[in-house]
Length: 397
Ligand code: HEM
Image 1 (cartoon, rainbow, N blue to C red):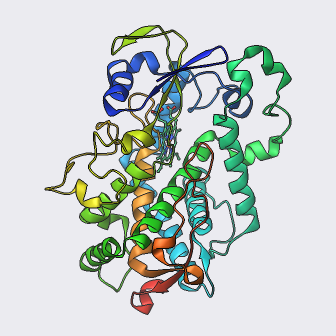
Image 2 (cartoon, rainbow, N blue to C red):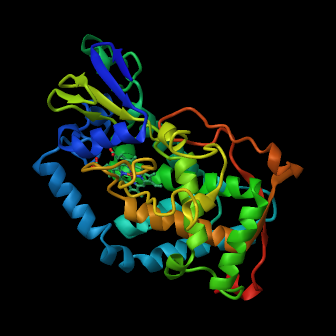
Image 3 (cartoon, rainbow, N blue to C red):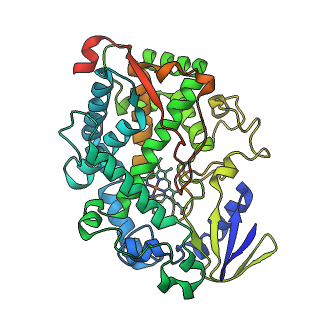
């Protein structure tokens, strides 16, 4: 699809084969992000990983983060931190006296784990897991920043309007202190995506009790009922991994990925793509493409198991029909961490509890609508009662 927004050509890749043309065959030509008000005013004038133009600075930043934060060794070193934050989350849920807003607690757990991995300290609270107004404020700042970074900003498309700043992107929305508190945009990229993926998974599992029962069964046989699940168990949880893939297919946290720009003009599938065109990849539509997936709207993890339609598909940018983390040179820098976190959090929640929707809501009535914005948030938060199902001592160790 080709659009012209203001002075900018925008092409949208909405099928796996076209996405592969852009992100594999022509990836080197689409390795920078288009200039955007978010990159300029929020991301220290493109001095970050997400918006930095493809080149030596970007390469250095990627290298530093991939060695010190996201390599297998770095991730293994920080395993106890993630485990502990997840244990705190499970403890908070186990002692909840009323219904809980699951997304809120997931967000707190994720942000504290990120804070400890990146800065050596929790961002919020003492780790007791109690919901904290500062955490809510931080979350809304991140959401706002995500919106500012990816928003359709008129000045990006019609340069003459930039100085007018009609949408207030430049104007003192964030103080220095807030910007410092938000740290690097990496924090932002990792803050919304992970909990949102887990929240969608839990909503799907609650709506599909047979699938939930199968995950319970797998966890009970691999882990038992006397301890919490650990990251080391994850490779043995094949069905859970299929469940996660099915969530990534239907509910990709970045449904339009992040934009890229054509460094030079090129030809793709017989179409001329002009230099400077913005590329959007519709990851969401690709995951629901009926030419790729049978009954695409059905939540059916079995499709990723042996005998299913895509038993070998992975989500790491090799199989273009499911690319929640994007693909090519600018693929998500935090993919390895994101994958571990979503799997561990989901495994822990399913294993440790039976789940009931709040206020007697029937699972088939659960609202599965998506809210507006760059990230794929649920329109309505998931409100639930967790019912502990493991031996009592499993929650206290
Ligand atoms: C479920 C979790 C996540 C999803 C679905 C996700 C998705 C994405 C997507 C689609 C992109 C754009 C890729 C492209 O242009 O092809 C991206 C980029 C990025 N993500 Fe993630 N992400 C997740 C978690 C994380 C985490 C935990 C971090 C770091 C803590 C992170 C850091 C980044 C960074 C730094 C980039 C920019 C990479 C670059 O431009 O070179 N992400 N992510």
